[in-house]
Length: 99
Length: 197
Image (cartoon, rainbow over all chains, first blue to last red; front, side, top):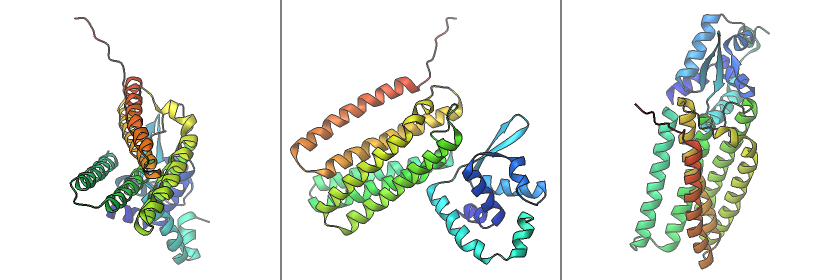
């Protein structure tokens, strides 16, 4: 459970989970959504995998990520989104998403 | 695999708890109303545990199924079962037992029917006899889900009424579910061919 809390504490990782809720996506597609370096994104994927929230599958040259959350973890994500975003200022949001 | 083990351990633990309550009632240690309330609470917890882990297990993510629709159906079933289980715990924790039984039977039946309709088109492709490791894990979870549906459906029927015909219906349902499980096993397990040496 500590790993899940750690995974959900970061807004980038929460955003990755929100994107994967829509559909499975490749590592490249996910990285394009954020203004951070590839090693940083790989680190985020690693944390999410260790927490058991996402699963990866190699398809040819690309790696596809799928959501693997339980209902409790989904509820925790919703809770973290509701209370986590409200504490972020606009500058931090610009650093994370480049917008 | 970790989630599968945790789900399995929780499921078995709760089933054993239900068996212990039934034995205690049979031995006169628990009154009739108390045992029904305890069993209702345990069935509610079973629904919560099963529903919680369901989206993690990706039962419907088989080749041929649209991944977006499969994920959506898994989330629908997961949340439906968790909310139904919370309803069971609330009914059997707060209401008089006779009212709790009827309310639980109606809620549980509605949940099972809603999930069945939602999963109807996807389950056929998920029941693949492929021998791969993911397909094997999926089959194990389908067997576990089948056991849960059996327990839950039996509970809904028994909760609904104490009439003798209901108990007879529950007995015949046990026979029916056993036959369906045998057919399911025959369909799902990959055929092994013997080679002459």
